[in-house]
Length: 115
Image 1 (cartoon, helix red, strand yellow):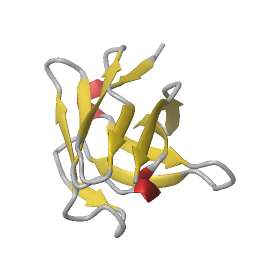
Image 2: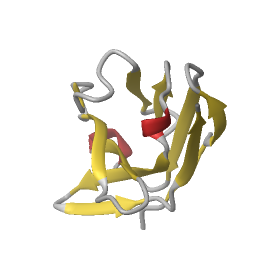
Image 3: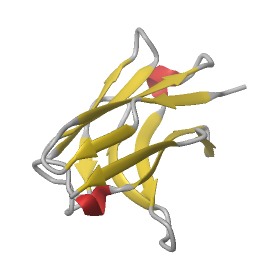
């Protein structure tokens, strides 16, 4: 069974940085496609960044140049480095693992950016 645990959220001023982490359990992490999503109140959940099993990355236009996704297969971790944060980045951030035609989600971590 796959479980995902996010950490690293918090309150930060605009222009600041945070690093989110997601720890995965299970044996298929290295072949999994990983993603970070976010959901602000009243909004749909949206893709922020994703990284394939071989390290290819894609980003939402709104975070390009500010956020960086990375992974450490040995530690079964995926990270989201968030720089130059803006108030509109405020949301609950979720980690997603996709493998064998299934999606698994973490419980989310709150990121609040004050102006």
